[in-house]
Image 1: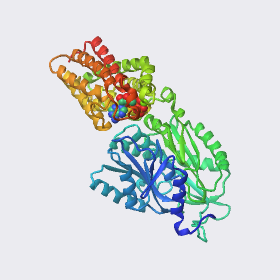
Image 2: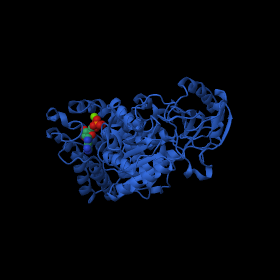
Image 3: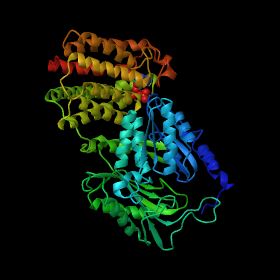
Image 4: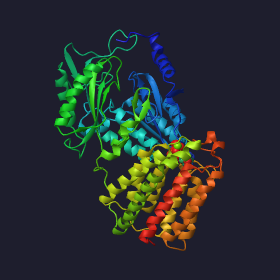
Amino acid sequence: MTRLFNDPTVFADEMIEGFVAASSRWVRPVSGGVVRRSPAPEGSVAVVIGGGSGHYPAFAGLVGDGLAHGAAMGNLFASPSAQQVHAVAAATERGGGVLLTYGNYAGDVLNFDQAQERLRAEGIACETVTVTDDISSAPAGDRARRRGIAGDLAVFKAASAAADAGYDLAGVARVARAANERTRSFGVAFSGCTLPGADEPLFTVPEGRMAIGLGIHGEPGIGEADLPSADELALLFVDALLGEMPDGIAAEGSRAAVILNGLGSVKYEELFVVYRRVALLLAERGVTIVEPEVGELCTSFDMAGASLTLFWLDDELERLWRAPADAPGYSKRHHDIVGLADDAPADLEAGIPLATPASLEAAATAGRAIEAIAAVIEEHAEELGRIDAVAGDGDHGIGMRRGASSANREAAAVLARGAGLGTALERAGDAWAARAGGTSGALWGVILRTAGSALGDADRPTAGAVAAAVTAASDAVRAFGKAELGDKTMVDVLVPFAESLAARAADGPLAAAWAGAAADARVAAAATADLLPRIGRARPHAEKSLGTPDAGAVSLALIVTAVAEVLDQEGSGA
Ligand code: ADP
Ligand code: MG
């Protein structure tokens, strides 16, 4: 039972006030809920979650870096209103649109849908992905009707990490849908919960018995059984979930994130005893467990119960699951992902679109160019860090090295699987953004993805087509990062480089045009030494940076110069 409260009718409000007071290093209150303390970069997608109160750390405890941008907080077990959802979304929106994602319950759907309509009417792009992980709430053929329980975390985490990696709204929604497709949960309860001030529990389970598949608000389950041992419960969980694999995935040889969730009054120690057997059983069935979570991640007041969630990963979802996060109720440390790219399995799930032979040839050139980029960044990483440290935070070399090397690995992997030019660049961009972190990581993701989608997989591009793709990338960086010429950023090199390339490509082969434009880029990079930063991390230390070029401008010039050498060796005229 819930023992500590004042006036039960204001319990949720008082709880929210206390939560906010205790969590101000991660979140700040807004009308309708809470949002991240430090806003995401302009142009990025905002992930807004929410639901009734009483499920902590869902939902407000899952707002923070690497996790949701905002949470709408309803009353006890009651959906937030459309006004609340709208207000939280409006407070987090940064120009890249909003993804609403939450557990699939009728009241939530009604209110979030209304909020979505309102946002769209105001010109804010908005998509919705409801979480439907609970396999006991509707048959497999009727997945859209299923409710969301602890698997919420898998979907929220993947979508939010994608948003922080610079994915656009369509990309974030795609990731959220894919994560939901691949997430299944199954839960049991041993006793109901009692809301503050209530005389009776919301529901009861007979003494010594277990309700199977009971929902987190006491919604009916699918059966009842005698209280099992911890090992028996582990077997029930694993059998149920392996009995309903997502389409096209076999347990044997697959990788899965595992969440063993306590509903409120099952002890962590009990959960660990259950998890011990869960891990053994999954290993026996050939499943590789990736960064499991055991603890309270979606509760139901003082309900005694537990659920197991399996989140079947592909390469992209694994990266997103493992990305760092820091929220009041959930954190994942940065070093968790160091070395990931080295042991990450090749992505066998996402298909590689068919490419023409001409595009395959061009893709091979791009592969060598990306290899040269990784090499030149490796060689200059320390110097780039030193330059960034003059007025920024000194991490530019580290970030660029992480991004370029993982882009290189990803490009090599997809080329081996027959990727064309456009796909190879897009996938390299995804890998770069997902691993690099920092502003420059997101922007290099944008550059490679934009150029890739402009070039496509259909032919070997002409010099003019390459110049047009570089111009598109330059425009996208300006749209996404909002920096203007003279702000002392990579834009001060990217724009003149794109313009020079376009002019030269009009009357010459690609290699010569690129070499000339790269020379212009070096001049432009050196000239940033005379500028005062007006944007980004370097801005507060503006004067210190006079006389030193911008780190991102220097790395860009190094990169286009390395690519010029590759094009020259290939004699790759259009
Ligand atoms: P962070 O700034 O997050 O530490 P990095 O150190 O990796 O990221 O990258 C810093 C570089 O990013 C800067 O030198 C600058 O060239 C570039 N940059 C920062 N903000 C912007 C922006 N809004 N638009 C374009 N480039 C930017
Ligand atoms: Mg930096």
